[in-house]
Length: 469
Image (cartoon, rainbow, N blue to C red; front, side):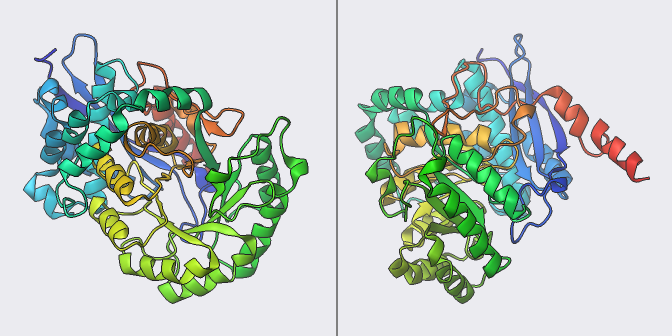
């Protein structure tokens, strides 16, 4: 296998018309066509080994990301895969190190998320070559292998390799116990599907009831367009999730430790709110204070995602009101997370599997969050993000933080049917653990989906244009 090389790549611009149903709508993003800039790394392996990866956009500009992916992926053509797999941290550095491509970041924006798609594809290939789901590949690493696979440049003032190694070794002896536990129970999830701004009150109430019946006890709603509307919708959601009559048969109350500091209601249900960056700092503070009545655990993305000190000011001002601050969905890179943690600006760390430049950079954020004692609750939804992030949360729980009590992973119930290995939720509202040894990073898309929704010549989009004309 040592002589197998990456021979090329295939890139697809895939877009789904989610703007037609209001899915994904929030105060900032009023029309979203969930899209995948999708790459497959090809090899000369006799058994057809490939690696699939993607990054996520909401429509226009997806073609720009695909162009950037092509330029980044070209760096891996001709490389022996085992040489790359032996030191994934070094491989990540190499992917990021083209000086001319780096200039148009550096390590941010289009070039960074394109690099993430390529790194994710390489990790997918690595996991497939070892016949393991991605999470299992990584949790089976020794602490030394884990550290070697991680991106450390620019973060050693927050966590050194030696500190990371000590942290991982402290958890190593109990990894098998946590793995067995989460395989049995699943990983805690929260649901956003009921909370989009584009939904009617009736749809919000119906979807919330369905989510409660499905076993969820953490719920998130979008806010920021209209204060009165936010309060009204928040009260609707609260009236459903706080009513014991809506609980499913056999409901087991959450553990007190999992609800500590979350403003849980009488049934143990937790509500979170998300502004998607629409406010200035003073506006965010006053607006969120006015929503205290609906008892949110945290406000997500209250202001610009790069404003570390702004988040710190908001957190300080909201602390007396018992409301926390979360962000990370649009945090450019590990350095932003480093500063958010150092500035004590967040109560919850929200990594994104596609905004960060792949698994190697995600590992660095997991390590920093564990050192600073901040729970990681990844952003998902979109297309493919739920498939991705269950792997990352399992890595965090089993190998890094060892903590699951306060953690919840976002779940949105759409577009999973386009993947060969879709994520799934059990009857307790928890993610099932991916177990198929062939699925890698779970992001392989059905060819028929690519053919139908490929932009601009997929059968759906050709048909849509004909209808318009």
